[in-house]
Amino acid sequence: MKRLLFILVLLALVLVFFTLGLDHSPSRILFPRLWLLFALLGVLPWLVKGAISAWQKHRVYARWQRPDRFDRNLIVIGGGAAGLVSSYIAAAVKAKVTLVEGHKMGGDCLNYGCVPSKTLIKSAKLAHQIRHADHYGLDAGNAHFSFKQVMARVHEVIRTIAPHDSVERYTKLGVEVLQGHACIVDPWTVEITLNEGRKQRLTTRSIIIATGARPFVPPLHGIEDVGYVTSDTLWDEFAKLDTPPERLVVLGGGPIGSELAHALARLGSNVAQVEMAGRILVREDEEVSALACAALEADGVSVLTNHKALRCEREKGEKYLVVEHEGQTRRIPFDVLVCAVGRSARLKGFGLEALGIPTQRTVVTNEYLETLYPNIYAAGDVAGPYQFTHTAAHQAWYAAVNALFGDFRKFKADYSVIPWATFIDPEVARVGLNELEAKERGIPFEVTRYGIDDLDRAIADGVAHGFVKVLTVPGKDRILGVTIVGEHASDLLTEFVLAMKWGLGLNKILSTIHTYPTLSEANKYAAGEWKRAHAPQRILAWLERFHTWRRG
Image 1 (cartoon, rainbow, N blue to C red):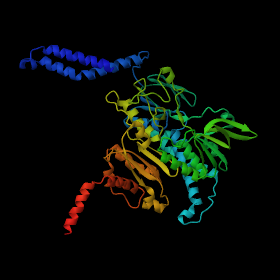
Image 2 (tube, rainbow, N blue to C red):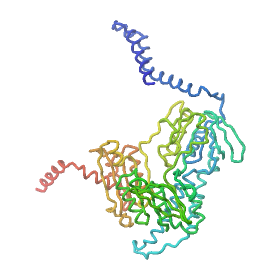
Image 3 (cartoon, rainbow, N blue to C red):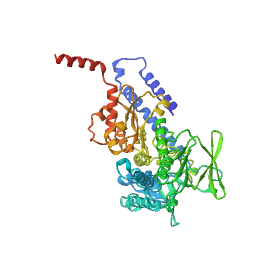
Image 4 (cartoon, rainbow, N blue to C red):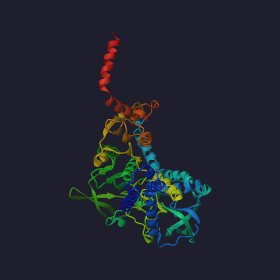
């Protein structure tokens, strides 16, 4: 396309040249046709782009019959974060929108991920604090509890939050919610098999695929025989137990595996966490991984890095995970195996194959979240590149706005400032670059670090551990990325997310009043560390002489 555009512009220049000829007289230059040609030259790139886009659309849609009218402006497939936000936006601007969800409204986050896991983590943290109450001048206790009641609270929290994502709420907002399975028949038609068995076909101008992701189960020999749970299924399975599993193997050293391993160890399980890589949380800096590993091991987790899972076995009523480490194999006995090695996009059964929509690990989209068909979009986990609830909601805005108004103006999805957190204790939170990524990309940076062990509020709360690490452009206060390890790190990170989003540097953070005594002062003190490192020494030397002179 760029080559064709270049050729057309070149032809236009040739046309202008021959129109001018060799006569450069004022009357010739002011000739109206010349100005018309200049105007044509100015708009030619846009005309060419429009023509090429129209030709590409014609080619893509050539084998399909476009309806004369549409039942809906937008159909959204999937009732998780991306689907809910997309349909909410459409209803807010008075579009006629249908949301199709075949299972539970709220998707993975509400039912299997963020909400239940953070509820479990809170109970586990409280049990840990009771056992270590002497740290606060109190008598340490044994943290007696009913595991069944802990899991009952998890489900109660889900039920309490569920109305936020319910059919009833979204219906009141103006969204038509259909509970069933959706399949895209052609670029403008969706067939919905309702849960009650009836089928319904709707035509629509645009479609958003927001089908989410599911836990990936590694193809280990024997895994089906010994049984396993995932981050999706463990909540119902554990709700049946009176006590925590005595021996637990968590397969995976990423955020999900680390959070579950830490929480369940604090609730009394003997946990072995198996990770094939050389460290857990491999996307973080090495020092962060080391701190995370130390925190898990301090609470009883046996962190087994560089251990490759080979197979599962059952012998004399016992279940084992067979792993390889440094050329040697060993068997790890367990009562429950938790698979937490990642999540794979839900791509099958929605008609993508029949339409020829390209998929790899996710649905392939362009920078506007368009698929092969410009009126079909994808957002959330099914689109990648991130699998966070907040990025799904972020993408949903772009998908919905482009789907409804893209004929007039389209917006490129912006991933420049993406925060995330791992909710172990201490929490790990990051936005932008860390040292590992900056080095891999060859981006120059400076590091400023503030140790939270020096923070008054952290000392008072008994959580004086961790740090704030800021990467900046060399010699400037512009923030490239921030990593925080510590109590409420995910909350503290927000100030830096805001700063990066709107181009505020460390000087602005330093000049902002932070309430004393709070953990948020760590951000200001980190900015202060940068300021001290960049103090103008020559000017300070002259100021010292000035003050000496004034003393007489």
